[in-house]
Image (cartoon, rainbow, N blue to C red; front, side):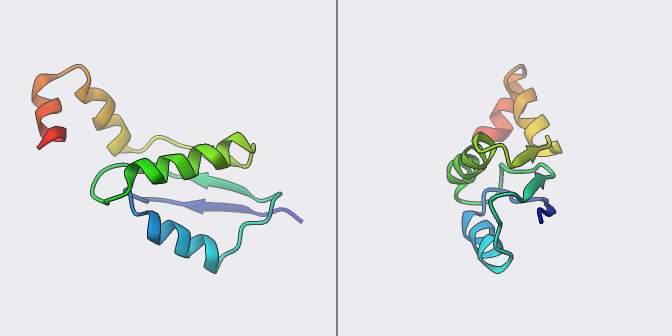
Length: 87
């Protein structure tokens, strides 16, 4: 029987994400909803995004955009916002 699971505020922390995944093992038919805030703060943003992309490619992830993703996307259009992200 599949489950609907939700995770929020990963913030680039791959170790915490993997620890949670080990503690609450995800079955192949489980659907994971991620509540945004994948980027910023943690040391492994790229690896977190790769983990999420892999899960999404299997059709078992519903990613939602959080405020940190919105701010990052806005930085593309504003020098001041971009400087904030590059500091």
